[in-house]
Length: 220
Ligand code: URA
Image 1 (cartoon, rainbow, N blue to C red):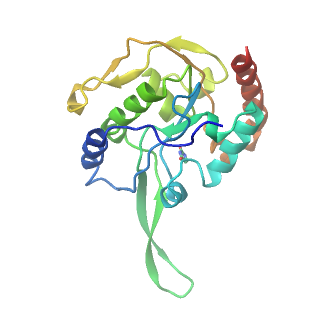
Image 2 (image 1 turned 135 degrees about the vertical axis):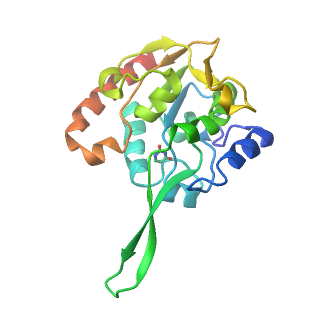
């Protein structure tokens, strides 16, 4: 069995990217996890509260769906690499009133902004270089747009193999330089985000069929 660990992203890259979000509404930090190198790399959106607490990607509600994806693919967490576009939990706060009348601040997940995704881009870039995946699996529109740079949606591209370059930070130390495309090309197979089915149960057949297509491709 392969080692389950985080890709050894350089401490300079981690410090640089973390410092960029130091004053944004995000909390915690965790790298991706799995095999290094790995044939298949899954890219999600951003960790949630459970992931930050556990220090492991996809361990909350979406994690149970992620495990179902892996089971259908006949893969284990120790033979793939699982990561996200942003490595901290983006949150929003609101004040809720408890039954006791006490008012408390509650944090819920939110979608990372474009600036947050660009701020953490060098981490994902380094993870891709270190993991050297043959197959990149963006899960959901946030990961898809981060990698392919287009505004086509998972709804139109899910379950199809795309061959092409991926976006990377043009300059690690200068987010204002934006993205450029990699010289390398990848096999990119977009899937719905594992949390999507929690909001729309009707997607489950489509997701299963996409996973069956991917399983066949991976065993070819
Ligand atoms: N959603 C993600 O994209 N990543 C996680 O780790 C958890 C939920």
